[in-house]
Image (cartoon, rainbow, N blue to C red; front, side, top):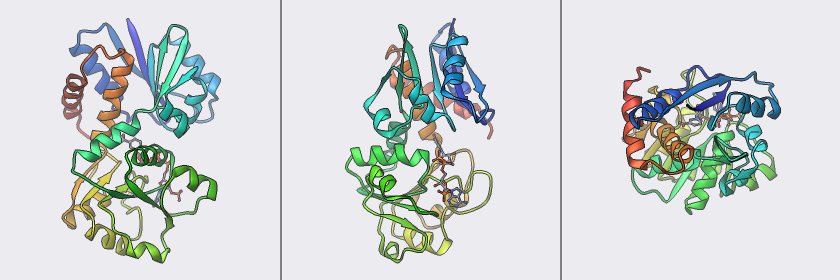
Length: 272
Ligand code: NDP
């Protein structure tokens, strides 16, 4: 039997096992995808040991282990190397290969809403690194707005045009086709990711809103809809990154469209 898992903390909420096990079953694969909760202070050795001891063929890695996941890999894809984190690892012979599928998972989901030339990312955490990377690679101009400042080196690495905090006046002239909530505001609370007046101003001029949080009608999503934007939550991104991970686990043996169809069916079974 082939074994896979997702590593994280917390991990009980993850729907990755549901998506992968449904596809595994429907493709008639002798396999199983589980979940592993590591303590938040675990080192890269614990992650690697756990991966090896469980005899896994591949795994997904989520918060807060995406950065240490990178350090257990023998080979890295160019995007994982540049972003500095992995969310998918695959064992081939005796080597571990690392990838970041959040990038394409996000971009495919975003372009499915329509064409955008520029974007504002609200939030500057781990996932913003992946989103910035793929926007830059696709020549989308973008700014970042975060509640707190970042140092010059971090901002340079993100390759944004401008980095703003809530009180920067220049932001009031901002015009963005796409506004992305990449913060955890709204995840376990009812907060907006930035002051309401500022968001309303920006959303009124935008075409699309994207909240990375999924399974919840967040205050940000509600405000996007109130301002007549085309908007979506993070479910398509989650499914997109899982489809790409599944392709990597099975070395392209299954068609992307078929995996996506099955994972969408699996997600629909879930009551959030
Ligand atoms: P991090 O913890 O690395 O970063 C969190 C960011 O949110 C920081 O910039 C932080 O600002 C900001 N923030 C937190 N609370 C608030 C608040 N109340 N108001 C304004 N800003 C706030 O998280 P990630 O980057 O990993 O994840 C960001 C979001 O994306 C999460 O909601 C996560 O669930 C979601 N996600 C979705 C995925 C999907 O597939 N759909 C995949 C990965 C993540 P500060 O720097 O000031 O603290």
